[in-house]
Image (cartoon, rainbow, N blue to C red):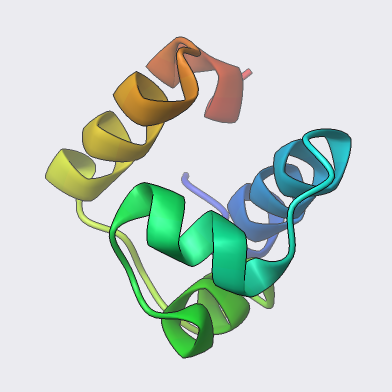
Length: 67
């Protein structure tokens, strides 16, 4: 089962590793900062299409979030 809180934690880890604010990260990914904040806290869900978009933009494999 997919855990949105874990996904959010991993997304936040990636953002911090890239030394980006939520605003910068959101702009880079094409979302609002409030949406990224909700995703990082596990309060918002991403569709599989959105996950694929994020992974392509970040140049990581989709499976990174499912291992």
